[in-house]
Length: 411
Ligand code: ASP
Ligand code: MG
Image 1 (spheres, rainbow, N blue to C red):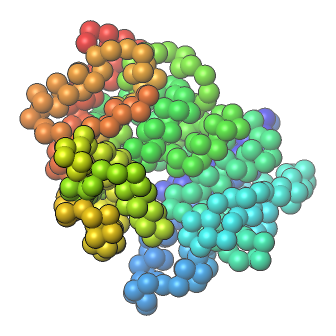
Image 2: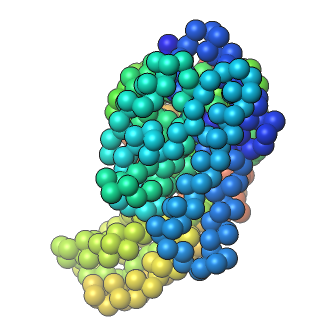
Image 3: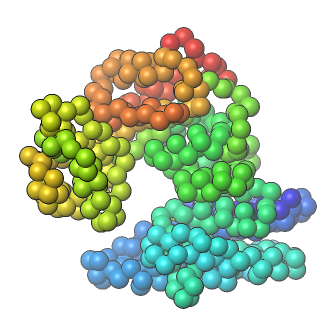
């Protein structure tokens, strides 16, 4: 098998762990597989580099910031390649440029446009393990661009697709995809498998296990992703297309996010174009909006609510002053300190009772719901940030997610 393995920052956080990863790669090769490896920056290196940059300039130049951040991954590739050589395995560290990863010219949020794999292929053919820097690429003008926080996962999937690999293995400090965050729910259970759609919803709603662009890319090319632990030897979770092998028709997992703010635009004249007039300037300023709810109108006036990351709130508020004038809204009100909790599962779309059970469980825990939104396979409630952990626990209990394979049809 040809495999792309990706190791996250925690898995390569220090010399000891890097040597451990090297041994893990070698044992895989001894097993008869060909392996290309993608690594993230060591530990919290990326955060440290950002702090360093902002201590020099409050708003660092985006080009130079990417220049700086790309060094994090460059350290990891060199050290892992050294580690492999030290135990007798030929290996070669490759930057995004050397690995042929071409991106669009957006500093800090580059999108992979194409991958030219000939160099990686040549190294593989020669029996050397290519160690590729995640999270970075190069534009047609040879500018270094990073791909957005957490995007080493995306690098790994893109490479696996381009190389025609059998699968991408995401080797982490957790054993796989769990039914909830184990720091909140100690008896959260590891799933044997999950569909792309479910994983995508979990990632989009705050699960940290996989970068959502990576899942999206894998689903487009039908590339299986295996999430497992780089530290302990235990079966992981397979992310794939098609039906879950077990546990259909039930909630698969709970995602949560504690970084939510909300803006409500009050008394907007209800005429065509208002939504466009409100959201275009926000989009132009790169404020990403999550849930949008327009309320029923009364006397041709309506209220419009949307949620966003609290990090973007101050910027959005500045724009809203102008926007309110523009669309003739009376005012806007913002709320912060919110969070959201979501239940996700393919079964939700066909079976009744999931919503009522969710609301009942939150009510029983004394948690007020601020806003509700749904997709075909997801139900999300906005709650106060301080109650997010309680909400996750209440829902994990209510849907009996600690039990393997149980069908919960008693709603
Ligand atoms: N090192 C980068 C970050 O921390 C990319 C990654 O970890 O995937 O965001
Ligand atoms: Mg990282």
